[in-house]
Image (tube, rainbow, N blue to C red; front, side):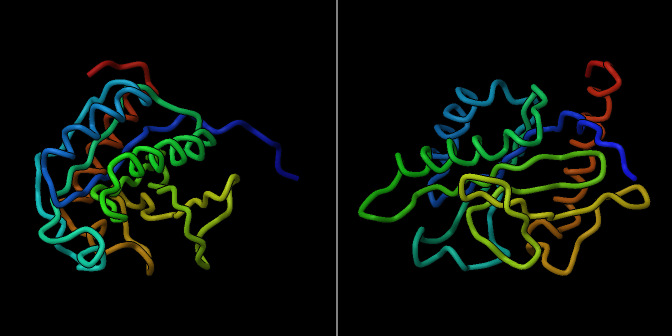
Length: 177
C-alpha cells in the first residue's frame, strides 16, 4: 500500500508568443500582477518550430520563456491557466488572439504544461484544464517524450529548463540565488 504524501511546491514558468514583441512586455507585467515577480526572463527569440498559429496570429511570432520567484502548489496551475486565458482574451483583436500564454511548472522530475485541450497523454485536473507531461528529468537532464512539442525539444530550450530546475532545487534547499 502506498502512503499519501503532499507534493513539494513547484516552480511556475510560462511560455509566451505573439506577432508583436511589445505585447510580450505588457503580458509579462500582467503575469507578474497575478503570479508575483519573475526571477528569469529569456531574451526574445522567434517561435519558428511550427507555423500552426500563423493563420490566427500572423507571422513571424516572437517568444519569451519566464519563471517566477515564488513557488506554487502544483494544483494551483488550474487557476493560473484560467487567469492566463483571461489575459489572452484582453488582447484579442478582430476575433484573433495576439498572444498565446502557456503556463506550466517545473518539478524535480518533470515539466508540466497546463492546457484546455484533451489528448491521450493529458490528465484531467479540474475546471476544463489538463496537465500535459511535456518533459521528464532523467540522467541529469530533461528528456523529450513522443508527444513533446518540437520547440520544447530544442537543446537550447532544454538547457534553459535545466537551469531553471537548478534554481528551483536551490529554492527547495533554502539556498538563495
